[in-house]
Image 1: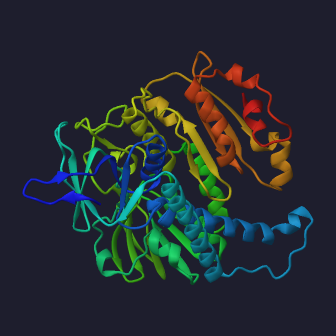
Image 2: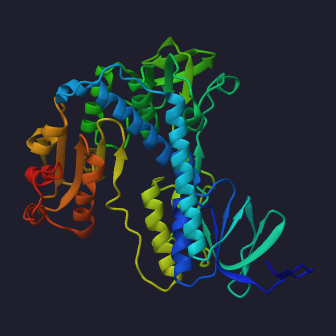
Image 3: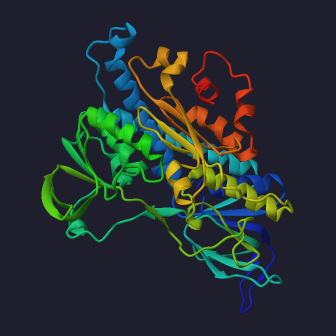
Length: 446
């Protein structure tokens, strides 16, 4: 990096765009900017890929797939297949997860190099924000860099609530759970959100006694309650113990005091997993529809905005932000963001839930079918169950689609496109779906 360091710094090498944070938003923005001719520098204080690749999306799905394969092998007799002495090796599962993370991280590094991105590993801080005439300054590892535009993609971190005794107890967050190489005899999960329920499914499949304590009256807040209840019932059938509308009052070693309906009781466990949610590392960042902050040359994408905290949302926000820097006019839309719970079976949702529509006093109708109406689903999910639920407006617009059953995550995009593009129910029903596919359930339900 060439620059003069004087009382007033004069930079010979000014970047068009500086990006802080190399998670899905950051590396997507960097690649897009570089390929469109913007001289770009990318700062990351930990590892390329951010939380999603290193501690979240990819590692958890890798573990969950191993658990799914193990469960399928145990249930192979349902499909007229004999599998004897089925076993798993958790250290090897973890090693495979680490191998996949390394492979994907290397892939991001290659993409950055191909796009001409300068990558700096270290914690970056904004020294000056610039005023439209002078470049803003970013300091990292004792060096100062200058850029005309700045994109903040600093991500999120685990929420640690002020539970009595928690800070004096060796508890897991998702980070420690992903590195664990021994199957705990029992695991109490504080929080019944997406992360907690996915780990509950994983460890339950491996034979751990799992207890979930959730403050709300149902798990997976924000997901269609009908589907959340179906998944909870399935997981309870497999042995997971749920305490809903319950608050953890205190923690003392392996003893967890909870309160429900004014009554207290104590649960015992060998391990605790804290999973009450995540919060942006930087708070209070407001953006417009182009992902601009109140400073016209500073943009923000991903978890920092506090809106979605989903990797795929962050990717689209990054595309919008860089597009705006390049002079394009596309605006960010949040009306069709899919949400997926990668348990076995899966839940996938997009658009409005019944609860949201009721709170907004919007009239709607509901269509639902068991997943067994799909021949492909029956063939691949022996004795499995599920439901496809489609919510429509009075004029036939698709407001929300909610699917419980495998592979919900792969077919929900059909519904997302319909909602985003305003395709009416009868228009989507007129489309030709390949047969036999599980995706046909959407057409059948309509």
